[in-house]
Image (cartoon, rainbow, N blue to C red; front, top):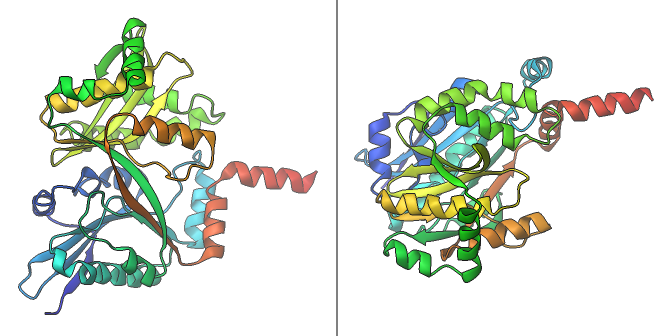
Length: 360
């Protein structure tokens, strides 16, 4: 039976999400509107990839996004304009996909998706494609990705089941973890479920606290945060929780909420060392349990940490009595020279350093 694969820039949101909810491990990363804030703020293009059988039944789906600029650097309109005029290319990204609805034909479905993406990338001069496989998927896609010249990197996450009673979850934590939570309580930390757009600005202040280009970066993300609040936070597809000390935000966790699954996707911590991270993490898990979610995913960590920072992240994520799951990060470059140029042009500080050194 032949399969039909399509890549569209629009799709019926209700139909897309209804299909997703049939798969227990699907998350908000694959939800229909997940990349809309990037579309509005930065001109990125969401890509809805579907695989259908001869009857029109969708057997596989993948939400990806095509980015045309680097978001990790400060804004520079001249350089962004130059990048556009040179038509250097773009980058495609996705998280926790594809979602497969027919395990028996899994390999064929994933193969069709990768073939379609490959063709799209070549036709649209894409520089790099990168993604991550689903967590807790019963299907393995490594052979498919390898066949299409993707580099596969093993990654881990820990998922805490929220089905036991809350006391049982708490009692199952290591003594040191419970001590850290109590330490935060004794320090008079206040747990807050974010309900006001202004907290996203506080988050950015903490995130870029030590960055000399803090003002430019915060301004660059202003429209993105406005869109994220309207599209994801108000309908509660995304939720932020913070810990405050004397009304000051010292720790925070941003989470994706969908299909009874909560996934941690961003964390900030100020320089204060009073176990704000443990305090806000436990209370976030508690909130998730009380609001009838089934799982709490701590987000990814490197199984082979190469720095003390990565070791610390991995240790922290592993200490909440979750079950460890493996998934994969996959990447495929299409033009390494242009990709290097793209990244350089989107790194204004690097350009300034090279110009300065040239004239010394």
